[in-house]
Length: 172
Image (cartoon, rainbow, N blue to C red; front, side):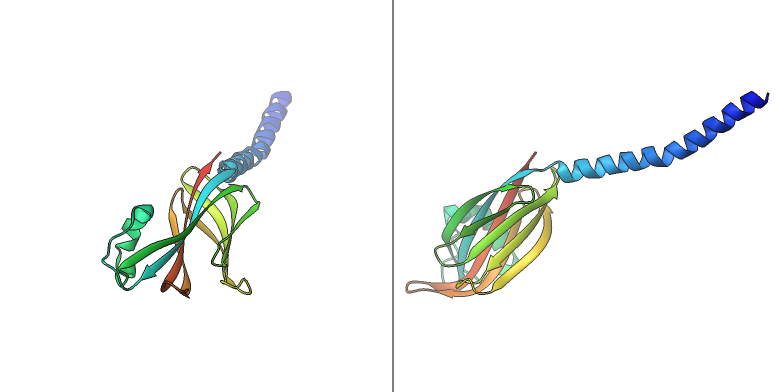
């Protein structure tokens, strides 16, 4: 009888000791799988000029912005112009940068995510490159759109408010 009690006691002690370890391993592996699910992403970064004058027609190259440009936040703008578009390929924890002909520099880093949401870090420099306009981590739906205001913009033929529209889609 004592032998059976010792076996039962040993089994109970071992089982009680292994439950937290196996529970931790399960949570840890799920967390690692969620963070490591996305290891690459492709991004389109668009420099877009919004003007108060215009007929409200959204050009075909900016059609993807239509739902955003028709919101209350952008209702004061009636003219839309794509200044430049850059494609960036992101790898996990590696910064990719694009310099625009107008002087701004955009940097993106893929921090992780899963098939539904991406975790990214974005940097945006001023037109002359001397100061940072943005440096932030964010989480967004896969293929979601982030609009960043970069202030007033003008050159010899146009003026308005400059925005950077960033859209990224992830892959495993």
